[in-house]
Each structure stands twice: as structure tokens, then as C-alpha cells.
Image 1 (cartoon, rainbow, N blue to C red):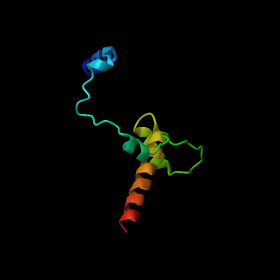
Image 2 (cartoon, rainbow, N blue to C red):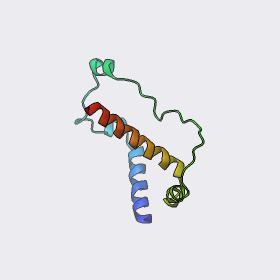
Image 3 (cartoon, one colour):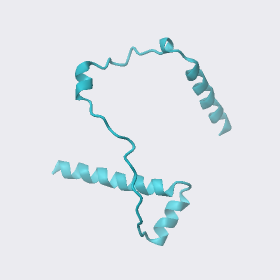
Image 4 (cartoon, rainbow, N blue to C red):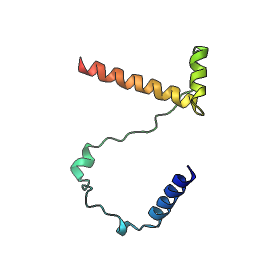
Length: 92
């Protein structure tokens, strides 16, 4: 794992050292005024709200057993369900 981490760090160091002139933008389309006028500002990440929920013991143990960040995982799972639900309701 250390070798991969060192490789990523050296890539990041190399990118940090690049000037804007060194970057190849040839495959990136220009952002026209038309595009920007249609763009929507998105607030991300959405503001979090503190809540209290009750979950089954085994579910909580499973979430915590996945490693640090179980509350983030709960949010990710709920967001996934919400987005799938929206997709299903739009198909009707």
C-alpha cells in the first residue's frame, strides 16, 4: 500500500508544480455564455441536520463493523434509496 500511496503523492506533487500553460485543455469544450446561462448553482454537500433515529442492534453493528464513518454510510444508503425512489416515480 505504501508504494501506491507514494506514487499518488508523487503524481500530486507533479500536478502541483504544473503551470496553467502546461495543462492540455484541447479535449475540454469552452464554457459558452449560453451554457453558463442554463447552469444551475448547486449547494453541495447539502446542509446536514442532526436527528435521532432508532435502528436495530444488528444493523448498527453491521454499519459500525464496516469501519469508521458509520453515520456517513447511513446517509449514503438513505440518499441512494431516495434517488432510486425518485427515478422509479419519474418512470411512471
